[in-house]
Length: 494
Image 1 (tube, one colour):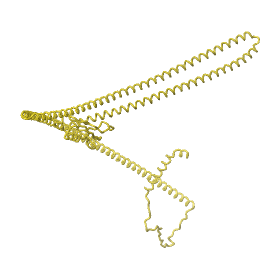
Image 2 (cartoon, helix red, strand yellow):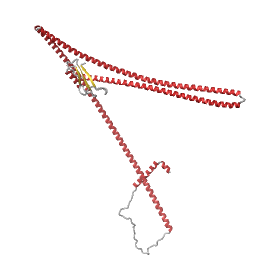
Image 3 (cartoon, one colour):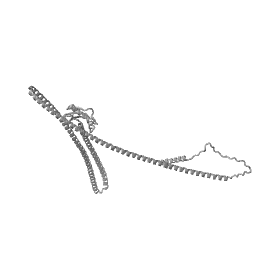
Image 4 (spheres, one colour):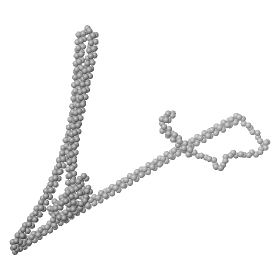
């Protein structure tokens, strides 16, 4: 029994806990009684008055049998009452324990039910709160998106209107400047005509010396104007040639980038083709080796089988001839044949062992040669792979450089276009050009001042270019963060 109890210690612990719980409930529910404080238990004494001797009846002394019977009856009744009281007390305690356990379980179930109900209510409330919050967020997001859209449309419209107004104002200014220039040229021509007429009249009056001086002055003036015009035309021609060279350089860089990309694609294609060819070649070599090994094993087995059959046939024929020829000396012949057979078996065994060793040596040599061949092949493949990777790395570096150059060129074009839209070109500066150097931050703002490297016009013309760059901030941002941010830009009215 103890063995069974030790096999299930958990059950033993549960039983002990239950008994302890019953004892505790019994102790708690038991009603203890105490004697009143200040009172002493005593035996009541009754005084017997003096009775006359005549009235006293003689006392009957019970016999020993009667005394014994009375004692037994009293003891039995006392034991039965004690047993009844104990049974009633145990039943009462058991009922009280059961009732207390039921009440405790009921209270525990009620607490768990209330707890689950509160938890469900809390989860439902949290869910409703999240749904309301999600709806509010969605409405706020939609309202924000709508407001952003409206603001963006408004800003786009204002920018378009502003650009249109700037364009119209610029056209009006250019038109006014052209008309003013035409009037000035006409007035100048008229003044010159008048001056010439006056000079002609004065020439008729003045001496030949004054006429010669005027002619010399006019000639010098014409030469000066011609030189200035030639210098201006030379500058314009030089600027156009430079622009053409820059365009040609850009086209050449783009062409080189395309050729490099095509070359990279061809290299990738060749590498994939080489991998496929190497895999196919390895597979074919493996199949050929397997086929050769099978054919070699098959031929060798057939050869050994034929040799064995031939030997067995020759031995049988020889034995038959020996049996026919030496029938009289069968015993000697049998002994001799046994010896011959023993020698022959030893010889065959030796021959087979020799062949086996030769075969193993050949297989080991072939395996070693194959391993050497495979090592050389792998080394060659690895060398080709490294060379190809080096070429690809160089090609990738060139492509990255070309891509960066192209990205910077496109960024520079966008900057020039962005600035020219905001450039108020002064009137009378057609054909002029200038060069500026700027350094642009990633956020589109110019770091430092706009450096005027070359100015082919007057101070107003150069100042208008610098002001245009200031008004154009922030400039367009770069498409990538690893570009050189310093630019040398040519500004003209083209």
